[in-house]
Image (cartoon, rainbow, N blue to C red; front, top):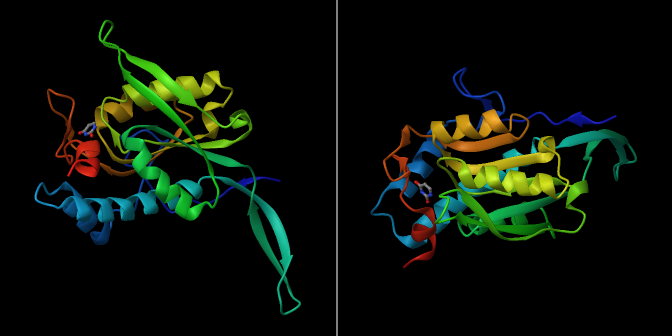
Length: 227
Ligand code: URA
């Protein structure tokens, strides 16, 4: 019988939807965020420290996957009553910033399949529009770790979930992982998709008039890819 693994993430405060899980807000984590938020941080350090946070987030995401009882025999001849992962997984990165999270997923899940999705603002309607997607053919049988570092308004993430659903992935098999969330985006996203588990490293204060997260870290893609 399947059981959901026990996450080590913290359940967010009451004002935050119950499908949201934050990393334990330790001093170490806060120090990592302080480095990547600092505008004086070099690109090399931004890469290194954002990768450390991504790794923690991916590990936490995996804690939300179901497991089943599994016993193995150890080299001492004894039986160990453990668990095994129940289903197959894949990653789906929202281009382009989400690609930065792929390596962190590959580090912990060897030969994991990774799909991609490109969503951009439609200049005519101002709504998020799907431009490209490529998924593993059996994605409807997998758990999906959806990767996008910054949850601002939630527009792209919601479009991505819609596209995944159109490809046969049920909402409850999607785990959305991001580094920083704005409360506005969290509320909109979780109201529309209450069964998607959302793992975030930090919940910030809000959005500015340009829809950047405050205090945030600026443009994640620019900090990561531009020298
Ligand atoms: N995307 C970013 O890179 N930064 C933000 O603050 C919001 C969206």
